Every structure is written in C-alpha cells, then in structure tokens.
Length: 235
Length: 235
View 1 (cartoon, rainbow over the protein chains, first blue to last red):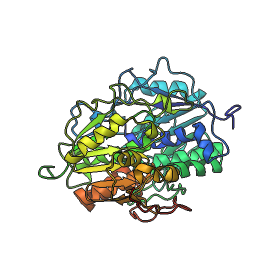
View 2 (cartoon, rainbow over the protein chains, first blue to last red):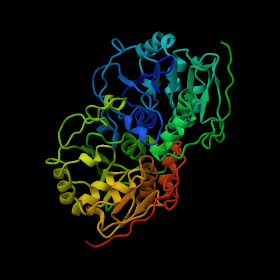
View 3 (cartoon, rainbow over the protein chains, first blue to last red):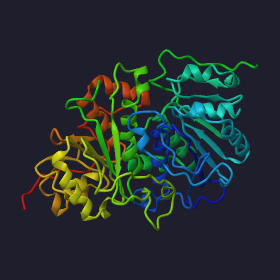
View 4 (cartoon, rainbow over the protein chains, first blue to last red):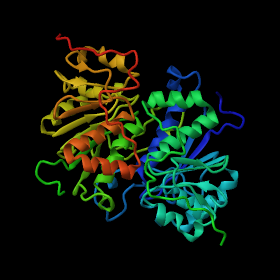
C-alpha cells in the first residue's frame, strides 16, 4: 500500500497543557505500528510515507499536568514541532481530550475552523469533542464524548446543534468527522477508523502487533449508564 | 490514602530510543489518574504525593522511532529529567519494551542490577522483560514477554534461568517482580498491580475514569497461539 491517491498520509496531533496521555498514545501506537516497515513481518502491507506533525500553541514542551497539580503527570513532557502558524497541510487531525480541554483558548478553536475544510478526517477523543463543538464542526452531526464529562459538555450552548449519542464507544458523524468516548475509547475508535480507511486486515494485524483486544462495537458503551442522548435544538 | 508507610509513591520510568509508546502511556495513564486530586470525584481516595521520574541514559529527548526509520514515530519526543547517574531513589520502576530494547547498552543493564535491591517493585512491559532477564532479575522466576518476540527472547542464553509462561497476559513472578505480555497487556498488568497494591476499588475506579474495559484474567492470552512455555535450564 503506497499511501498515494486519496489515502491519508499526513497526520497531525493537536496538543495542549492538560491533555490526557492515553487519548494521544493509544491512537498513535496504532499509527506507529501501521507506518513501520517491520509491520511487514505480520502484514502484507504497511502505510508508506506517513508523517506526523505535533502541533501546539507554543513551541514549548507540553505536559498532561497543569501548573499547581500534584501527582505524576507533570513529569511527562512532549515536544511539539509546529505552532498554529506554521503547521503543515494535514490529511488527518487528531484532537485529544483531557482536563485542559476546557482551558483551550479561542485562537486554537479558530485554527480548527480554518484548517477543517482542507482535512480529509477529523478525529476527536474524549473531551476533544468539546473543542470541535466550540468550532462548530459538529453542527448537524451525531457525536459522542467522555462519559464523566457528559453533562457539562452536552449542555453547552455551543453544542446544541449536535446530536450527542450516549451509548456509543465512538461515532462516525460523517465520512469526515469521527468522535470517540473517553480516554481508552480513542484507541478503539481509531482502530475502527483504520479499518474503514485502510481495510480490515490492516486493523486486525495492528491489533495483533499491539496485543490489543479491541472493542469493535461502536454502539455499546459500558460507561454510559444513566446517561441519555441529547438531541439537537436549534438556537 | 496518604501513601505513607510501605505504600509506593516514588515511581520511575526507564526510557530508551525505540521504546513502544503504549507500553509507557497505558500504565502512566492509570498512574496519572490515581494520583490526581480530581480522581476524588469518583473515588473515595487518591494516592497522594506520587512522583514520577523519567530516566534515560542521556538528557536528550527520547523518541519511539530510531534513526533511519520512516513513519510517524520519529515525531514523538519525550523529555527525560534524570540520567542513570542522578536518578532518585525509587519505590517502583517501570521498564517498557519496544524495537529499541535489543539495543539497550550494558550500562543500563548494570544500572538495573544496581538499583533493583532498593526497589519495592519492578514492572516490565513487553520486551522490557528482556532487559530484566539480561540483568539476571528474572532468574528463578516465572515471567512473560511480547508474543511476537517470544522465541528470540526466551531462547537467549541469559534467559535460561527463567520459566517463561506463554499463556499469560501478565505474570506476578514474585511479590516484587511483575512482567507483562506485549504492548497493551502492560495496561492490564499495571491495573492488576494497582489492584494488589492499593486495592480493588481504586483499580475499578481508575478503569471507570479511563473508560477502560480491562482484561482481569492474567492466565488467558489470545495472542499466545502456537507458543509454548519455556522452562528454565540451569547452565
């Protein structure tokens, strides 16, 4: 598989302080695997010429912790290589969630709006859906998000044009826009996206490499108990 | 839960070029969650005063990719804060696997040997078990490792004193030494370790936060097909 034609090869990851690490590195694990040449040990094909651009508001190491926090997460620092100003053209953008998602400034939301028309795919994980909703990119679509943050996110004024689906591990809201439920649901949703875009064999082989027992049923979510769908209301 | 007494609070992560990202960030996701104060939203307790020290041979950003590789993984760069020389005392050391594990130099193995007596717990993920085996830390113990690298790792001369268990998602080889199977098995093994050390409620609540459907059966491994246990042989 050469990755030419319409198959996406140019991936981007949006990082911000307070992102959730598994939101990011579950999907990236799968991306790393399918774009590595040694994947050919178990797969007839790999995705050639994949690039990943890590993008943040500032060119400073980004931590899943926030200043003033205690715990382990402040020690983890990821280096971004692009800012909003110089990010390259992308086929696919991955937007993670995390406790910092509610602090993401408007300039990042405007950047999402600006680049969205040129994307082939937008994939949000967890409360990353809130950023897409703020940017209006979920208007008129079915979507899902983190189940512990369900009420706060789905009740927002800016989200009222979205049909929020509670009982979903992930939702393909359109060909272009995929949203997943919280944290580890991002891995399952991203592998489902791989299956749709690159084929079932590649997804299965990636799981074998990752020794990953995937959840392949998007409509079942063991973490949605007591939550309900939030249909859109025009405002 | 105060984390005083014998409960471990000082965590270390050993990084090296070519580590596998999910080996690291599956367990760290769980560690981040149980050490965050907002975990109290769903848990009666969190683990206070947790520190995480990221340790590498050199104080340079560490990538899951290796020079000359193609693909996405070169873009991911994690900043270590300690070298082998100035790493602080640790209660728990996490050793990930990855394609770079076979290139880890002897100086790192010697460091593992040196710090091991002062650890409360050593947890290896994937081919991280090979580093522990090289250091002799699995001698006389049951252990497991990545299933695609099974034959190359379990046939090594240095590993002959280990009883390698094929049909295992993870193995508690002793109170102190835990080894897991490949990549995503590390998350399940680490959550099982949390359960044993901090209690079942904390482990369950961490899974709820992570929206993680855990595999709680250590003795079943869907990826061990065709592989066999390798009993120890004294050399």
